[in-house]
Length: 262
Image (cartoon, rainbow, N blue to C red; front, side, top):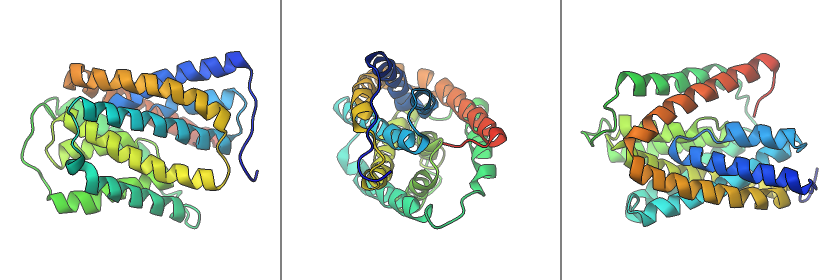
């Protein structure tokens, strides 16, 4: 399909998609993995796979933007702390979106489930991780110019679990408090989402009418999620990261078995 994707859905279907986006925005803000809800919902609504992925990236970008702004207003983010890694994530994702068009990335089929399970196991076996700030395990430069763009590259090429990867990197490698790591993860994920969305927009794959409705739901869910991060903190974030990491692993393995990927 060339040009802007156009697809008309009945009003009640759009309402359901908007409500799904509310839940996805809330989950994405706290732990990531909102695509587990929105992508299947778009496919069930009859949106073709490529257009579903493109439209999902549009509405999820709106959610991460809302969450990032909300956390900044709540004092959980400072622009001077995220400016450089934000740009690094953007460049990494843009590079990944370019490379995926010319490289075979099927080797990731075996890596992603292992990493997602590893994230869940880490937060289960190290229950105090992220409770307080601790000594960084790697330098700021290595983190900003190595780890962050590498995760952004992964998001541009593949995608599942990116928010959880950013959160784990902040806690495990930079010794951040889990709430701070989650806030930073939203900003970095926003950058990587924007780069991937740009590729879909240029290709004319976004269904704007559906995306606009879901953006409203994402904004509501992300706003609620931002407040939950500030009020619930580690008590709420950690179990959700574990649950969503295992859920994404199960969904991914199921996709491998039936030959469906998103």
